[in-house]
Length: 446
Ligand code: P5A
Image (tube, rainbow, N blue to C red; front, side, top):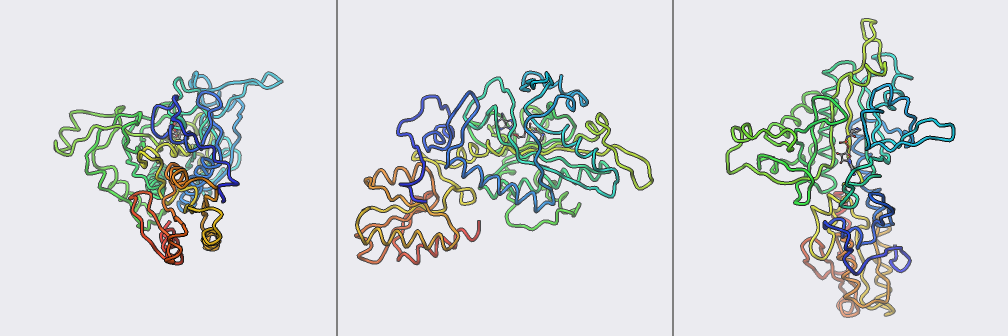
């Protein structure tokens, strides 16, 4: 993309309505525009990162054997009356009527609808296990929408639902989700710590939230600092293996890590030596639930078991806050100049800054870098505007591309361009071909 032809409405001033850094930077970098309280338009740069995050989620869901569907945003109230949640959900649910006076709602989650799909089409245990998921807009009429996409009213969520014959099988689905979530967040450059939590309106006994540590997080968390040493890394897991998924779950959940909802001060002191006890804040980027037969009992979602008898299926649901993740990633990765995107989610792979637009040699060198990156399957953002160098650098630093190549007549005389790492700020002078090769090599791991 050439910046002269892009739509990147960056703001020079700090927007006064933004209280936390991620909200401020998303507005300043022209990623989002607020349309009403907690409701945003996604401008090109923000939309691009949203899509990157969504793609990682889809890839990791496919790896775990889960199947994508898409359910409607507007749902009839009747299914929600069957489960009892039409009344339970309260004011967080946005309700409306169609022209025939039928009660409708904007989906805050989709346990009822997916259970309806299941009961209409599945009747034998032979079709299990089954996990269906979607990535879809949700609406919750939050009392206090704030911090930009972090606590929106309209927000984008990955929501998955498992159907299993037995509790044991459903617990394997729970463990499998935990493993696949660890991988998903790590690909986005995040450490998200599974913590024992409370299940709220979704219901059930077993639930973990995934938290990214950040001072601006809305949840208070209590944990053993040893959990921050854990990393999933590039291990390969067989998602069908009960033992392997169980082992990962134990490794990542056996140390003390809880949100304030389940925190137990006595147990904290008993289980964690003082020097490793941490009280901090975190951003909830996902949650997994096992709730047994709560919805299948209420809605008659049964299958015929091996003995011919009909039994309600065991279920759980699993969510990732896809739009919230943009805020969480920026909270975890920025400096005073702007965003620092992890390679896995960056909107463009490399920025090209032309120090002397209009100089034949500099223009030609930038063009050939641009074409070479495209040919290598990467997306460069070329700042081809006739702006002064300081302004170009400030924009690149603000929008946070991990790598930048600076091209100017002086370097070209010596046959070099400058390659700069956004995270460390370090630069090296290299012949253009070597700079390209280095950037291509880095992205071959992402
Ligand atoms: C699991 C999937 C559920 O709704 N039902 C289907 C279950 N879980 S949840 O924890 O309530 O939500 C899942 C994730 O969505 C994000 N989230 C939000 N993001 C932005 N703004 C909001 N108002 C908001 N509410 C929830 C969180 O990341 C949460 O973990």
